[in-house]
Amino acid sequence: MASASGYFKVWRTKSVAAWSSSWVEPEVQHLMSTAAVQHDALQRLHAIRSRQGKSGTPGLDDATIVRFVDRDARLLQAIGEAEQRLDTLVDELGENAVFGDEGDLVRDLQSGFVNFYAAPTVNPYVALAARGPWIVTAHGAVLHDNGGYGMLGAGHGPQDVIDAMAGNHVMANVMTPSFSQHRFIQRLRREIGHSREDG
Image (cartoon, rainbow, N blue to C red; front, side, top):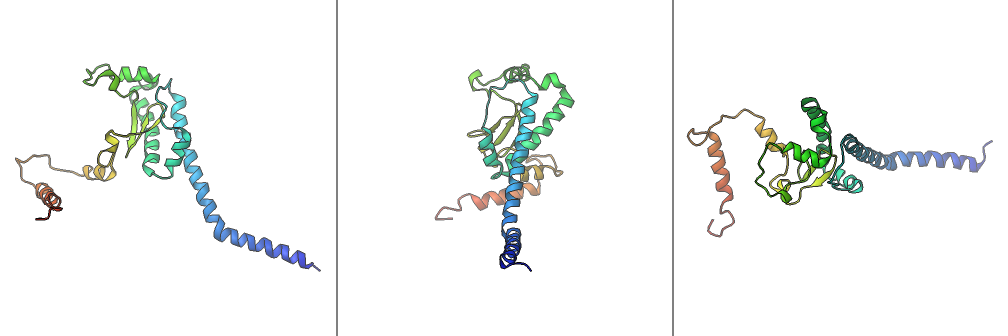
């Protein structure tokens, strides 16, 4: 015959298991899935870094990247797109044109251009992919584009703009009347002066 303590142990085990599955498991699963996503993002960046030469642009450290991956899906999207784009560029241009030390790559990619920016103001990295304020470089660094295009409007690669541009549009200016002109003016009139006392 089982003792009272034996019954208690069985009851306690079942109760803890039931409590665990109803309260703890969703939280644990969330933490595990978050950790998996963070780990995957870093793995992708490390894969890019391992294929490249010397980098002079460190970007954000991995701990900071991990913190923001969970807060902004656009960072995760940019990292995934960077990995894919690197492979696409290798297929298109060849490894010699894509891989190398960062300074050499910057110089080689712009060798056919006369840059109207002063040399010290030219960014010392090659942007590979970007979403919102996040840039992923060809050497696997993650940058937050403070003060650049990433902070204007909706930032890099705004999905709603991409979706709108993906449709077919008549290419014309004001020489050709269109419903888009009417839509544009209506939206401007809704915004301009709406905060003035006289309307």
